[in-house]
Amino acid sequence: MAPHRVRVAALAPEMALGPREARHLHVLRLREGDPLRVFDGRGAEAEATLTLLDDLRAVLTLGERLNGTAETPQPVTLAVALLKGDKLADVVRAATELGAARVQLLVTRHADAREIGTQKLLRLRRVAEEASKQSRRTVTPEVLAPLPLADLSWEGTLFVAQPGAAARLTDHLTWNAPVTVLTGPEGGLSEAEVAGLTAKGAVAVTLGPRILRAETAPVALLGALVATGV
Image (cartoon, rainbow, N blue to C red):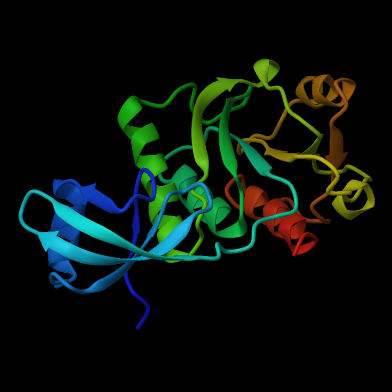
C-alpha cells in the first residue's frame, strides 16, 4: 500500500504538523517510524518519516526527494460561476484531479448565488487539498474568491463553453501560453456576457450537441482540454 501523503507548507529537514493533521494520522493508526510522503502543493514531493506523534502535533523528517507528477504544458485556470449546494465542491474536486492550476469563482448575471461565505471558501480549498492527496498530484490548485465576470482577466487564451457555438476547442488550442476555460451557471451565460468576453479575445466553443448541467460542463471542458496536453 502506498504511504499516506501529507501536504506541508514547504519541504524542510523537519516539518511540524498541527493538531488536525496529527489527529488524522492517529485515525490512520500510524506510528513513529512509519513512512509517509510530503508535498508542498507547488510541485515538490519527497519521502518522509514520522518521528513524533502526539495529540497536538506530528513531526516528520525529510527523506529522498521524488519527481512530481506531470502537469499540463501550460497552467490551466478554471473560471466557474457560483453554484448552489455542494456542486462547487464536486467541481473543485474534479478540477484538481484533472490538472487545473487555479479555480476562479465568478459572479454572473444568472449565477445560482451572488456570494459565498468565508467558511465555504475555506472548505473548497480543503476539498482541493484532499483531492490533490487522493489523486497523487503534487500541485494543489488555488481556489480564488468570487469576482464579477466583468472583472475577469486572463493570460493566453480564454475558452468559453457556449451552447450553439461553432468552434471546437481542439481547433484553437496550441499550448503556447496559459489557458483559461470558463463555464456558466445553471441558467447559462447571457448573450451580452458572451459578447463581452469574445470582444476581449475569448473563444466561444461547443461542448457537443447536448445541453450539460452547470456542474458537468466544467468537467467536460477540462477533460477535453487536458487530454490534448498529456
